[in-house]
Amino acid sequence: MACSTPQRIQATLDAAGVSHFVDPDLKEHLLRLYFFWEDPSIHVVKEDVFYRERERCRSGNATSKFYSEVLANSTCAICAALTPRHCVELPEPMVDFFASRAKALLDAEMDSPTLSTVQSLVILSGVEAAVTLDARGRLYYGMAIPSLNENTITTPAYVTTSDEPRFWQPYIDDLEDFDFPQLPDPTEEMHKHNATLCAKMTKIRETLYSDSVVPTIGPQRLHDFASDMRSELLVWHSELPTSLLVDLTSVSSFYVPHVLQRHMQYHCVMILVNRPFFSASTATLRDVAFTDPMVGRPACTDSARVISKLLQIYRRLYRFRRINVQAEHLIFTVSLIHVFNACEAKEPCLKNSAWKDLEVCCQALTEMGKGYKNALRALGVVNSIRTELLNATRESVKRDSLSAPGAEYNQGPSNRRGSTWEDEDTLNCPGAFGHTNISQDDTLLNPALNIIDSLFWS
Image (tube, rainbow, N blue to C red; front, top):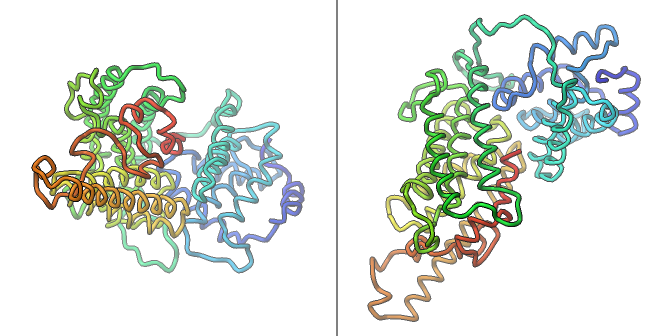
């Protein structure tokens, strides 16, 4: 049972070497950051239940399924990345300090996990991802799933306030100048629609990104699935209520950050549906009837452009210092589309816009890197792929100019970069997704090549 006695908690922290005194004001600051910036995008903890159960535990050594020091330290760990504050009395970085406290206390709860244990595991999975320990993050998330049973998901009785209007205003550090109006908070409504989006994500993962070693679905059925799912996603987006809509053309509208990130997630899912067919054509998949012209590169490009616009809106309103940790993978995914279009597209207008959009994504990852190490890693991967693609196209142009001065090698503008998309043949660029000489058919059917999406699905 959670809420161990203060004596046992102190003894556990002493043994782990992390029993330092934590200023209550610092802990409250980190908890407020969590409930204002992290939790609304990935709703894990009910704020009113958390504080009520914490008070009950502290007042009389009571026990609770809905609060523990593991949960409190886990939330502090993820939000230590969101603040510039430093505490000379605590080891640096504070993310590692609070995470170490949570992990030390976690062991005592594992024999009899409660809802707060599950919540802690989910949050710790994000902490590990943020510090680039992806395998550990997936393990924590995997440990949380079996613990979701009838005993742990029962929520406490409380008076609902769903009919009362809720408002959101950014919580920031004391020394920051941040004038911002109160905004209606559609969090509860957003999560209802998010549940249906997650159900579609599950279907996409199981169909297009299956763990099966031997493909069980042929290319035509995969194409038809992508086409049908694209239509389903469009319907999902069209049915969003007014409170969850975003006007991409407005330069003065205000939106809560979790609504902007939900739209980013929607478009990222659209990219994942279509990306296996990014360079597909009748030349590479001869047995596929491409009945939906939007499947593949057109849909990926459209969604990538929208995400860049959403990032610009987010930067105008909030900057990226406190964006939810999941956003790193969303931006990384869309950056890859921009990289390929910038380096390989044959249309000048598409290349130019892709370079501009890529710059937006790289700036976002750079600012996120102040708190999240995985954002800097993603930025490094994007820059590496960009460099290798540019080198590959330069080598292609050089080989063409040296080997064949005849007409067969001089079709089209002479100053055009060599492009793998021009022939729409294969994805042969060295370093792309960490593979070389991989045909589009292999990319489509081999699930091992889709490993970069693994973190997104968790």
